[in-house]
Amino acid sequence: MLQDLPKNLDKSMKFNLILIGCGKMGGALAKSWLGNDLVQKIQILDPGEIDPKLSTFPTVFHVKHFQDIDFIDSDFLILAVKPQVIHNICHNIKPVMTENLA
Image 1 (cartoon, helix red, strand yellow):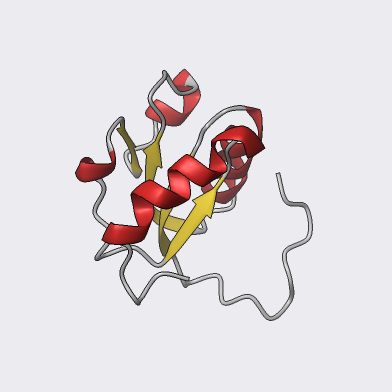
Image 2 (image 1 turned 135 degrees about the horizontal axis):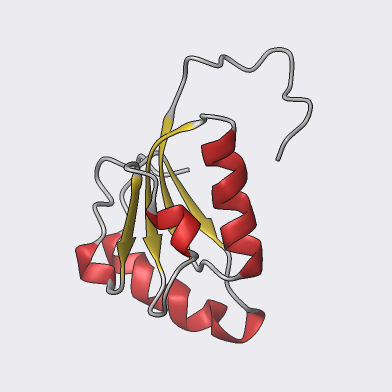
């Protein structure tokens, strides 16, 4: 978990995130954001199972297909996938990306 959050971080701001990939790296990121109460909602796209601890949070939504992601109400898209699949992931998300995503 994050020990020292930046002093200028507005702790009342919570974000809607899309996390693509929830292996070791993606899972660690999600747990940190949730543990520090930084997210309003996380949509996790992963075709496999996610860590059962993440499923206990009411703000976590596990989806297995691109078409099930709500891109419109999301603030950030985070890619946490292996390098060999990044090209395929980017090809699939490009048509559905919205301008509001960072």
